[in-house]
Image (tube, rainbow, N blue to C red):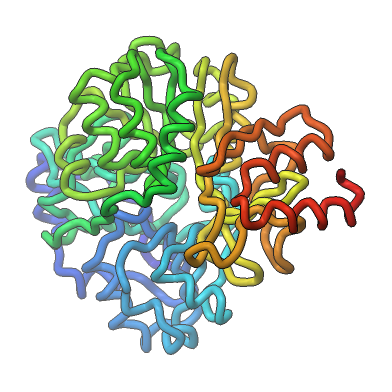
Length: 441
């Protein structure tokens, strides 16, 4: 059990309190005891120095569990030899934790993203919260910067809060601030923020981007992910007008839309005039863009990803990628057979929110094939072991480079035919034969 407790009032000013709480990383992690639940901030807001210092203490610890969400670096604790001392639990996987999940030495907890703050604060009873933050302002506030996902809910329950002040962390608006009085210890580490970028889009992604853009009317509110296809969608939106953003995550691809006046959030009834998200992830381009930008607000996932909140944005266009879809309309977006790839994230949150939005659409995108055309991503039945991320009842629009299939409200026969029609031509006859065997057509 932790010996630390919540902060007591400090009699001096904020600078004096700051100096009193400022310690080195090795000193800070000494206050983390065995048999504790440690929660890290999300992805680009993970505190690199604290995490590595905690790993160096691993032999002094037993029964400690680290809970992470989208780890963005190859941290030292993400290896099997950590397991006897520190257990690892992922709430969304990345390439850095994928191996551990599939080999069994890293656990994974399924979740819808809007429920993540509740699960982390109520189900696991967090003891420690670690986060990277911006430098403190003159009023004594740090900003959580690039990610605010579940921070406030966890802080309310944690006995120990340690922040890693980083001069590269942007100061963002919305619900992103934490006061020095709410912090137990402060450490400094000015490492560059992790970045993720994408090169030139594939020809298939370019076609899909154009087809998706045709579905988006002027005045719509968008949820765009990050990746090859969402970037291609953005290229085809430059002629649109009065678009808005309400998303789980924003990236570099929105910057040009804002700078060219395509995105102005004019017709959003919720947070009018504001780009709303819970996480910002990309390159220095997006990090510089959100720094002290009053147009951008970051909020907890319990707000941004709540399907009811999402649905209150009319013409909400949710655009998400999937890995495989079967002829019933079931989508596997987080695993390839038995092998875990990522997580559910906010995909279902936005699928459901968009379908209940007046004029909204949920659009799932995927190239028609994989491995340079060796196999079809549209299949009769999902591969054995595949996780169904989006059920057949939640699938609305599906787009490949061969067209658009609208499945919602359609019969099994109509669905099968629509999906076969947007499959790669090399696989259509085989899909038809399998559909006939399954009595779908």
